[in-house]
Image (cartoon, rainbow, N blue to C red; front, top):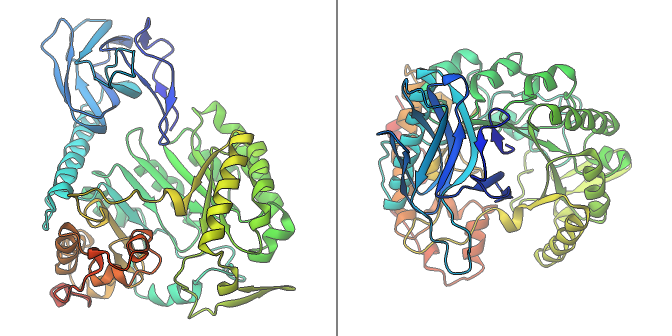
Length: 501
């Protein structure tokens, strides 16, 4: 979200330096001593703070102390009934090295005020869970006490494009076959999963469908999206009319809209003829959200293929004029997932051949450089999936954090990551257990335990090696001698029988 300071004059004097952006959003460095105006005697101060190293934060003239941990976290500080209207917060100076002449305290993304004891307790629970989860990941813990701070769900199985004819690169029929027998992800089910989503920093909808079609979509946004917890979803943009915009405006929501062409004719090759309406509604959303703290955060996604790679510059220019926050470039997976639906699809006179549409790795590097230059020229933020998805593994840490930080619970089953093709558990295995009990059984089940154990040893489990679309595995595979690819016969690759009751 954009930098938030609750109230017109919450920050006093020259407490902070100019606004910066770290790729995750706007923030500013404070000085080691910085002041905030306390409006209307509010009891709780909520801060979104980041520091490379931990430190103690104190409220001057009081006994109030708050431990600040390394990384970005939300904090809620109980100020009690003290009558201070101007608070001075004190933190140890951060030493950024000789090249930094400023006196730095802590990075500040938001300062909010409230009087809710329930919200205060919730913020503290989320942070405690996130810190525990990070410690478990770094130590390579196999059985987790924390719940995943990144929860991935799918709430809608229908699609207003696929109901006529699925997009040419969509494995629609195969996925719909796998979803048979799954529960409805409605408000009732979500409320039973409160221990999971309420402890999450972000809840991401990964529907193989169109989320705004859900009858309770607005209520789901209202339930999950808070100042401290983001809700994100991907949409084809066909339902961004007044009703859906009203549910999103001013909310901590990340919207990803899939638009793979700069023209109506180009869009129709892959999807349908709704391009002009989608762009019109998108312009309205981007204009309206300026009056609502620039929320939701809007990203448009473009799959780079041989038939549209020449459109990227025009696409960036178009999206700059529309007013989106970010453009994301993706490429077709190396793993063809269209076996069931058929890798060759036809839209009018256009024939889509999955294999022929894949852009070679060397050419993707050239496209990335040219796109970065154009984005800089137009002044638009650009994310390139094949470059920015994952940094190189850090020595001493597990090869991948997904089995610790995330849980993917879809209608087609549970997955350890977004690149998995085979579920580690299906809903047919739930038996008489509640959804919450089933989640518990899966997240610390035998297969995820074995995956964590292998990744912590610096070895990819067989499940990961079979995920041909994973950029982390692909990076290691480029060097055929990588020890991460050695054989791991002890890893369980089939569904663990312990989950079946």
